[in-house]
Image 1 (spheres, helix red, strand yellow):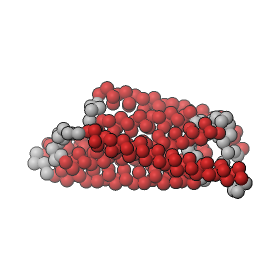
Image 2 (cartoon, rainbow, N blue to C red; image 1 turned 180 degrees about the vertical axis):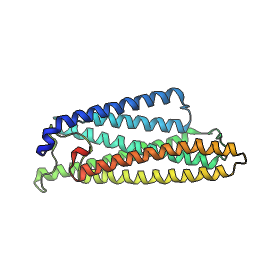
Image 3 (cartoon, rainbow, N blue to C red; image 1 turned 45 degrees about the vertical axis):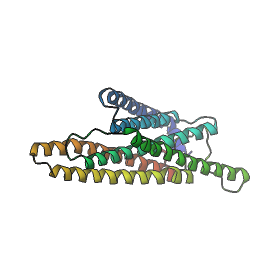
Image 4 (cartoon, one colour; image 1 turned 90 degrees about the horizontal axis):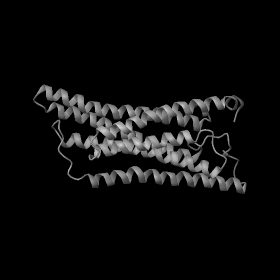
Length: 255
């Protein structure tokens, strides 16, 4: 660590903990409120609740990783768990966008038809949202252990070491690029594409409404849903961009 970061590390860590704690409280309130006042028997409700839970766990792991731990294996495990939850939240957000797009396409009326079978679609979403991040964790772990073996045999330059002053967040190097950054960018692009397609479908189905009040209500209600997904995608994109700059350019303050 450089001198500026080392001298301000305690203050920065305190700021991270306080800010993350506030966001954790907000996520917890959103989780509880949505659980109490939403229909969790629907695919949309279950997908959004899974997104909130994975986002909450990712934020919690981020707070736990502040300051690092003495054991290198435990620190790596925390980093991999954080990677898993961050990718899982992106996957569930894409699933929410995909489900909204399907509902808008299949329902020209404001009130959608009841979903006949949620189990099959939920199984497909769960397989993607929980399975794909697990595969990326395996990729990142393979890169990290390969780097560690290369260091032990003296075949490469000494890379990042886990020390007590190191934060147990997303790792650096090829493990970060191919285990998190590349799949995260792909998921964000898919999410934006689905959200834009959903917005176009809303305008198309609204134009089919004869009653102007029903048309305006459809645009407002479904537009709010698509707008929420777009705001979440933009926010997560901003966070991932800052994380990429922090990891690739070695600027830990951006975390």
